[in-house]
Length: 512
Image (cartoon, rainbow, N blue to C red; front, side):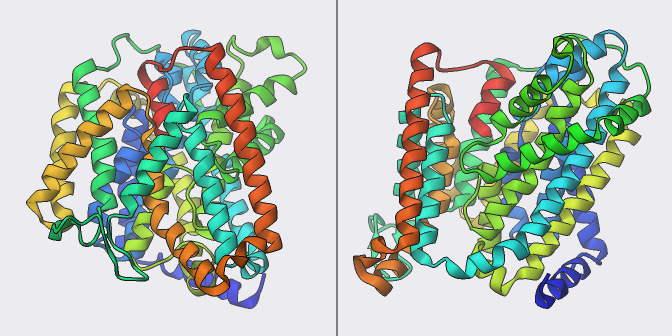
């Protein structure tokens, strides 16, 4: 590691040595734990959307501590619903149902939870170490990437997310294009030209991404919860057994944890895959590499260890592309980029060059929050299980209150309340008719960055930037991957004409 990066890593740790930073991380861990256990499947996009208007007014490291603490622990504690109720706990924990619930029904619920916590904690650390190692490894390559290459990389990532975010690819492309269109509202940063303002002062600075996030993910979640009255109707399986039996199982299967963790890291780095497939890829690998695959689906603890370790390691892979390249892998990381921009940081190569200590602060927060989340799971296993029975009648009013308070706190403008309600209704119908909201919000987030890199490319090289070797290679790879993925998704949609799922699985696919 270069000396400058070594000092950046030390400074990144020193940035955390404040009580308010540690307290914010613990608060984030608490929020993430409740979000993971609550039966409504609230999801991190909703948590980030509600928290964003508040934390962007904090000091940057303190705000990052809350956001990273919440997202890091949400995956570690996501196994309660699959194991105790047989309900998918959201994206990344759907495969856990196959073996976790049978274990719970035969009186091994604590063993399954112990294996989940331990595998998740180990996966989180492996993902964190991968992120830390990627910084010095990627730094030489980052200096070789200019605005043309970064524009193509972002275009590639957006196209893949648009295709993979929904079960109908064309709807994903439409949603992403609409997000890019919304990103053009307001004053163009480089030229100063006003676009789509319609003589309305409210639109001069463009559409607030914080407001849009609240509208697209907050209002639809609250409406869906109120209208469907979603909750846990059946009684949980008895919480019996020993947590430490699961710990022993995980340590015994350490090589499986390592392999599946790197599956999760790979899924996090590759554009467009996302959390909706990471658990199934890890579960399939565990079953195929087992000497007795017939035991899977009948309560094999390896069927819990594999998806949980991959799901937690994926966060490290997500942050590799988010922090080092500047494009997000999902809605959660997209909203994290919004927070970074609000704090004055530009994620990507410029942040690696100018604010490496902030990146290492995120690395430290990711690792520490993963350890704290694992300890919380072991310490409060029985108490957290009761959170899964919280009823929707308690959640809906609180959600609406926080959504409206968050919208008003952004600019203290009453018009923001009208905007959040209007786009909230749009988000609800997008959810009902299978138009992926993640693709739209990603288009809105990436629109400004893509336009900036494109403007720089044309200003510096004219249209000759299209002839740069790296740009040509990236365009070929992006076009091939986009075309092949689009074809496979169209074939899958013809074989399976149903365009929607029910319950938590549908929300996981949409909000991953």
